[in-house]
Length: 453
Image (cartoon, rainbow, N blue to C red; front, top):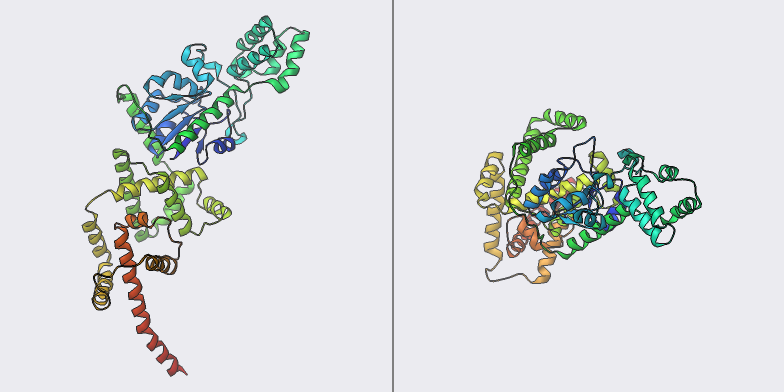
């Protein structure tokens, strides 16, 4: 499954991927980001961090829409805990103490989880303390007899009266009267402070990992279908416009392609087919499984000889995409391939394309030659033994395609529109055809060599 997690100041990308291997980690979510993740093939979404001000916040409706598509949406720690408390009755999965406190009404203010953080270039490092972590820290200090009830209340009041961007332990302590207990508490903070949001985020990622590894279907239910309001339709239009917008470097690449009109037409048609297949996949709810995604990854890396990590990194840099974008594109390719494989009646259209491209006649000559050869050399009731099958497969993939044998030959056969038995028969005929061609050309080669001598 493809998991997408929105995180930033609460927990870093490296730690997120360590707890949820293979996850695509995106920056804090703003309005439209969850909708885009759902449209681009996410099979599970984890919302930790999101924007509160300056950027429009994650909309409830996009979470509801994602769940309507059968995508489980998890929330914890920060914006995720807020939205989960508001939408848990519709199926959003809330995780952690902060979510529970919002859901039960113990805390109600948005500023409880808000923090000031650095920009993306500096890794969204938190620059203030969230109120929920301050509460958890004071609770631990009281349980450890560092603070008594009155002192704990004084710390919480000093913190709560400050604007969330100014909640740092240095400023909070400065607001308290000088006293031995304040100094004792300040010293204890160096090792005793609690990062409540990070703890909840870790718990959510571990739960997501268990869910994805279990292979269990998503139990996502909504009370009623989301209403397609004018505001929702506007968000959809804006997301689609943004998706179609191009980076300047990408525009220059397409301009170069336009100078080769025939090549441009080929890639335009391939892009159109991919787009139509993805639209069909989304309409039908088609989601490729983990095996299909791994097959897509292995196939692409073999095609471009990206066997080492540094080779893959160099390829990503040359092609102007990140590892997360690469994974998303492979997921889309697998989704489109699965949708295309489910379409019936493609054969007549494929034959039409072959004729128009001038490729039909050459393939027909080869097919006729193989049929004549099969009639002479093979008996209808002769079947290939298992060892012969593997020998034929090894010859075909290594000598003809110059690639490794796929782990799942049955799946490979299905990807080219035939069954496993038909595939093995196909490559056996190809092997015999090659042997005959070699036998024909060998005497000619020896004769030419003798003349030259």
